[in-house]
Length: 359
Image (cartoon, rainbow, N blue to C red; front, side):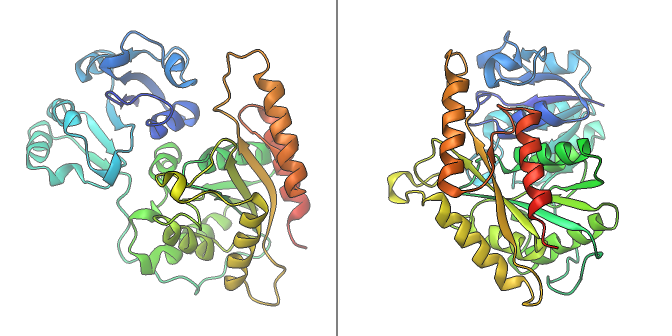
């Protein structure tokens, strides 16, 4: 399988979250990123990952490089397919190329794209399409001895999926049996399966999370669940709470972007809270689901995202270490940036998880 990522006009850190995650973690080959405004560059020049993956000007150019799958690599406001993407998607579908879509709008809901898919006998994989007949949560217990980790956020888009995958890698380095539970479109594209909980009817979000966690616990001793949104985000808190209660974590890792001052999409109208308050909020909400006889679920580590620091600055790493140390002092918890610090940072978080799991 050879994948091309469609990110026309948006292949940048703030707008190409799916593209960046796939470039960093996908087990398959990415042959090109499509963005005519940045064509001729290397992907890593644009977003910091994807070294030697070329940015090309058109879907035609990507197909010439052998692409067999076209992945929409951006997240448009409202979840609609951008109009500027439709002609490229139609071309790919007419050529029989499979399309992976992580947006809320379904590809085949567009009559022109449906006709193109029929002409090319092309498949469409809707990453956000939930399975039918999901259960209501609270009725299934996972295998005894399995430990569940949930990444939670001070806000949306702070690095919860990234932290989850780095924790998975760290636990595996330590010799543990680990399963990753993907709950968003990018994680699903990387892992090959999962349920996008923000596309699930509200009554069944907890049930979807419980289903995935219990199934994963049959195969592993550690289950790392990709978090979504934030309990204090006005738009996404419902999904966050359903995922928290359905996954019923033993321990949590709080993810935070160090420069974020206000809730994503709300500017100064909704300032972020102190990190210690987020810890209290998540632990309190987790306790609503946890039986009184069980040890409480705790936030045991902080995953901080310092990616916005200028990497070209000679003292960026030194500044990052000061930020990490400051957050560790503020919260009293082990803190790391698992991307900037690499394996050492992720291993520090994994160590905190192993120490923090209730007996």
